[in-house]
Length: 166
Image: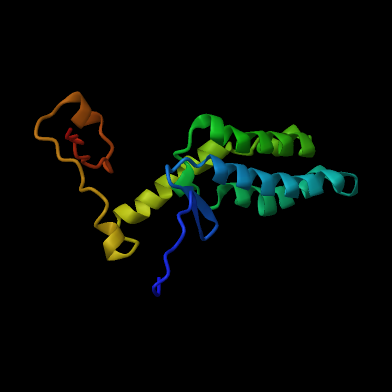
């Protein structure tokens, strides 16, 4: 850049997402878990001053968004990596300690799936830039009436069969 060579780096941090060269999201998820655990720790220290319902509100407003930020990018991480975030949610459930309040909390994996599907829905219906809409494969068209065709969802897309060359 401007005649200077840039040093190689094993990861790139862009808008709060740390992508490594091999797209292992472990470092990123551990970083998110650290920030979320610090915020949750503050709530544990302040527990005696608040009711259970009052503790649940800052968890939903300050801790959970940290664990969900840009999740459609890194939600493909292995389960053992994402389990780090699930353990923080379990700590929050223990903090609130009211099954009537925490029973309605959805799991983080469910929330990530819903977020992914919501994003896909917006892309599929062109509620994004034209360049991004072009990346979405077309709807699947079935030539024959098979079990797969009959049971297919109306938003099923046609995925190309990957080919490898040696």
